[in-house]
Every structure is written in C-alpha cells, then in structure tokens.
Image (cartoon, rainbow, N blue to C red; front, side):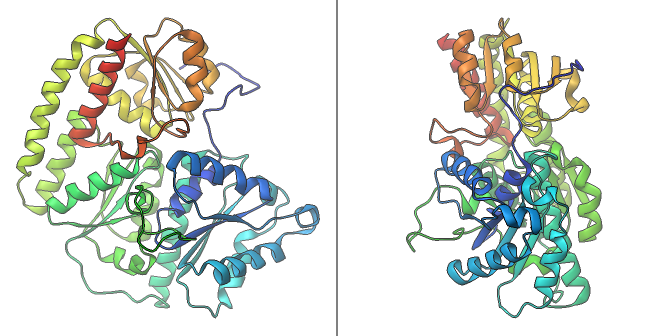
Amino acid sequence: MDNLIRNIEINPLKTSSSLGAGVFFLGLKNAAVLMHGAVGCASFDKVTLTKHFRENIPIVTTALNESGAILGGKDFLIAGIKNVYEKMKPDFIGIASSGLTETNGEDIAGIVKDFKSGLNISFACVIYAGTPDYKGCFEDGYTAAMLSLLAEAFDRNKNGKPFKKSGKRANSVNVFCPPSFTPQDFLELREALEYFNLKPFMIPDLGLSLDGHLDERGYLQTTSDGFDAKYLPEIFNSRFNLIIGLSLKDAVKNIEGLTGLKSYYFPNICGLKNSDKFFNLLSKSTGKEIPEKYKRQRRQLMDAYLDSHFYFSGKEIALALGIDLLDSFSAIYSEIGVNLKLGISTKAVGDIRYRFSDLREGDLDLLDTCGSADMIVSNSNAKFYAQNLGIPLLKAGFPIIDEIGHNYKHYILYGGAISLAVESANLLNKE
C-alpha cells in the first residue's frame, strides 16, 4: 500500500460517523434518530439517506444555535428528546452527536444518562452514540451505535430493570451485520438462517425497515419495522453471536463481552469459499443438512464463474468502496481470477492487500490513476471520473443517488456472487 501524504481530499469516499450511526438506528423498529447539532448537520444526513434508500428517513435535529454551541447544548438536547417523544411517539430514540457539539467538550453521555435516570415516560430506549465528524468514518459510527445499544441492554439486564432475563430461546441467534449490507442482503440472510430453524435477532434489521415497501398504515414519522428493542433482554439467551464484516472485526471482543455468548466471526459471507464456511457452520451447529436450495445455488455459482471468466480475461478493475464491500467484492472477483488493479477504501486494510496490485486509503480522486482500467466499481460520486476516463462504472456501495433498485440487489452467499459476476461480465461485454 502506498503511503502517500495527502493534505486535501478532492472527492471524499469517506462519510461521517454520524451518518453511520443514523443508519444503524434506522434498523430498529418504531425508531427516530436525533442529531445533536446544528440544523445543517441533520439535513445533510437526511437528504443523503433519503436519496439512497428512497424512503422516509426519520432524522430530526436539536437545532443547536450559536449560544448553545458556545455555552453548552444541554437544554437543546433535553428539549429535543422531549419533542421527539411527544410528537413522533417512538419506542426508540437514537442520539448521534456532531462535530459542533463534541468540539466544546460537553459531557453529552452524562447529560443523557442524567435525563434517563429521572425518566418517567414509557418508551423503551434512549441511546447515545458519540459520532463527531472529525473522528472516524461511516463504519465507525455504525459500530459505535451498535455497541451503545448492547451496553444499554447489558446494564439493564445486569440490574434487572426495566428488563428481566427471559427464558431460554435455544433456537435464537444474534446476527450483527455490517453497514455495507443492502436491505435485500438482510432478508436473504434471515431466510438462510430460518432454513436451519434458527430465529435470527438481526441487530439492526434494515431488511425490515428500509426494504422499500408500502405500509398499510400510510405515512409514518418513525421507522415502520426493524429489530424491536423489546427483545433486547432475549439476546442474552441466544445460542451464539454471528458477526459479519471486516469493519466489525475490532468489535468482536466487545460484543462477546457484552452478550456473554460465543461468537463466530466472518469478514464476509460472499463468494464460494466464504459461503461454504458459513453454511458448514450452520449445518454443524444445528445438526441439519444444508438445504438443497443452497446446494443448487452453489452449482449455479460455479457455472456462473465459468461463463463470466471469459469476459474478465485480460481485464483490469478498480474498486473504490468502503472496507466491507471492498473485501466482499474483491473476494468474489479473486475467485473468478480478475486482475484487481487498484483498490481504494476509507481505512487501511492489510488483510486483503494481497488481492490488489495497488491498495490505498484515500479519496475518489485517486481514480485518476487508473486510466488503463477496464471497469470501475464505486458509488454514484465516481460517475464523473468514469465519464472523464471513458471507463464503465458498476455502481455499488453508499451513496447511490442517481439510480433506483439497488436496495433490491444482494451480494451475499452464492446467489449474491452470481449477481455480481453476471452484472460485471455484462457491463464489460457492452464495452
């Protein structure tokens, strides 16, 4: 990996940690996201997420002004929580901070804790995740929100109030998915687990909340579905944790410590090799044979690899993606035998360096160095680079704001690898 010093980001690939926390909170049922900061802090996140998911995004702001930023925003935060509850009636409020509110060093976690200690209203959870814009990235904010939720559940379970430990649910499993998963990925994974008679607690569950369905209740001010916070005490009685995603690697020990359960970690569950490991684990842990549906999909994937291999012959691909998708896509392309000329991501990821001729941490401007590549795989913001270089662009990742239907795609397990291999081959064939 080249360690080039760059003093400016021309076209950032990295997005803020508050955006990642917001996405996590949106995977909870009847939830609202409260951004503690100026109006613009929430507006950017709300607009970006609305364009990407094409759904109602319940993000509101504490509307901090100049005096609040200087003298402290405690009153704004408390008023914001009360307003959200009174007007939106959520079961869950996820609070994400911003660079503005974190810069003055105010103890936001302490304010939320003191407020909750005197709480006399009935909704289940108010969770705070520290997500200053100047620290971390999308994946870090997502992970911070996840650990904040688990820490809250751990404290309540330990203290015995208001949650009480429930009886054994021998068939339940806690599933922690990466922020790179599309809503359809969540649904596909849920279906696979249910084939083994496992009851998944998807934490979060964007497959239920942002899969793009018309709700019979009409317009809702909160999320329509997702992981229900009332099941938090039951996660301690699950059989094991299933943790997926390179971005969650450093969180495995924390998740194990908070839940007290054995964890199985997968950097990704994409492609032939990783899908084999995943299904073999499920078969071994449940004592059930792998369903014929997935055995057939495995054979279909091998055939798709053979069919698409000819279109990749002699071709070079550049990928500019978040670390989870970079790992997942490069795993699939490597199985086909594709020459990965350039990889760009939001973090240094030495685990997958061997797959690339050149792997860098940086921004989309680095795509200017891939002039001889035959295809670029990145989000909508890479469109102008692809046009200028005359290279086809396969759009994936976050955000995708100039197309619809991407949330119905899936890239995990055998079926997802088939989709990516065929879509990529067809795009190369057109050129």
